[in-house]
Length: 301
Image (tube, rainbow, N blue to C red; front, side, top):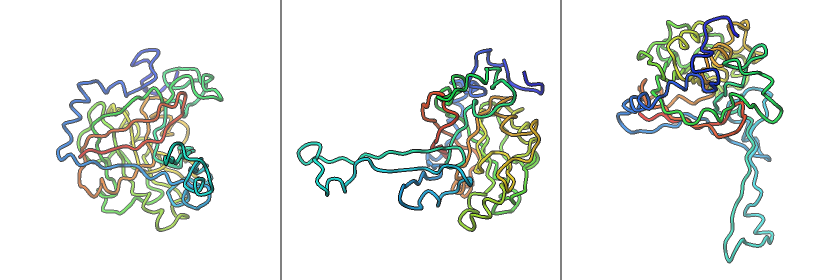
C-alpha cells in the first residue's frame, strides 16, 4: 500500500476505474451545460503513417519510439495489375494500421501503465500485467468519458507563445474556472508548436506539471488530466523525468490517485477560441489489457 494520500480503496477493493467513478449520470448531465455554441473541435494530432515515406516523422513524437505504420493490404494498384474484383465491377481498398501510442500520438494511459513496487493502482497485483496484456486496470475499463473540460492555458496566462522547456507548472499558475469533482483538467504548454520550428528543440526537453500541481489537481478530484506535452510532467533532454520517484507525475496521478492521463493533445485551436470551459468527450479503443489507447478527444464549445 502506498504511504502518501491516495484513492486506494475509496471506490471499493476491486475498483479498476479510479476517479472516472465520479462521472455519475448527474455529473455527466451537468457537464453538458458547458456547451453553449455547439462548435466541435478535435484535440488530437493526426496519425500519419506510411511504410514508404517520411510521413510518420512529420508529427511530434518522442525520439526512439516506434512510429505508426499504415499500409494497404489491397489497393488500386492491385486491380490495375489484374486482381479480380470482389464482384461485378466492385472493388475495395483495405488498410492496416499499427500504432504504438505512448509517445507517438494522442492517447490515454490506462491505470496499469505505470506503478511502483509490486502493486498497481488500488493494490492490484502487478504480476497480473502479462505478456499478452494486463488482466487488471486495462484501458478497456475506461469506457467513454463525457465530462466538463477546463482549459488551463498557462502560456497565455503568462503572456507567452509556449512555455520554456525547463518550466514546471506550479499550482499558482493553474488559473481558470474552479474545478469540480469529475472534471477533466486540460493543460496547455504550447510545446507541440515548437516541432515545426525545430525537432531538435522539441527533443531538448519539455515543460509540464510540477509534482505539487499534480497533487493539487488530485486533491480536486479531477477524473483525468490531459496535456499537449508527452508526459504530463516535464522531461529533460534524455526524454526522462528529473523528479524523484515520490514526485513522478505518473505515480502521483495514475498509481496513487487513479487519475487517467491523456497526452499529446493539440490545443492551439482551443486556445484561440478563448474558451476555458467546454464539454470534453473521449473514448479509448476496447483493447483488452491495453496499457493505453489512441483517442480523438473532442471539445464541444
